[in-house]
View: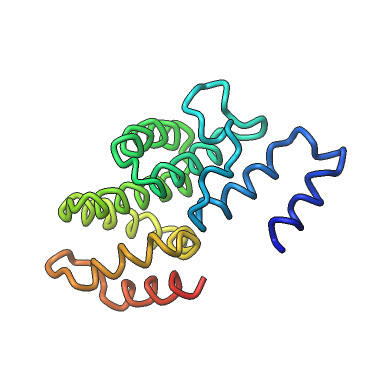
Length: 172
């Protein structure tokens, strides 16, 4: 239903070349694990693949696709590029996505210390700026990360926050 609704908007002439509809569908497809349906210009590592409207969204979606398909080394490499871009633009939300993405990848790799460092950085960015939606909207990955952190001690992250993010990510 949602995909069909987005496709109907994409068919309108006025929005044909904006790329937003590919981006919208990519969010959905990356969340449900159907990465092969994500537009090629988003999945492609070539610079020609950058979006006609923004560089941040396609990088974030490419990152989500790499994580969803278990391409962790590639995801870490892209995180370096994405982090440099976010810092150069002083883009707090993009930087939050980078640090959360790094925590998720490190957690998937079983690198607990690195996952904790990245999650603490993400928590600090989120708390200081009251930005928690990135954790929630990355539901399935955040839920797993928070579950692991809830069973890990000594990291200094507030248990109440971990429980809250886990619950919200589980119901998003």
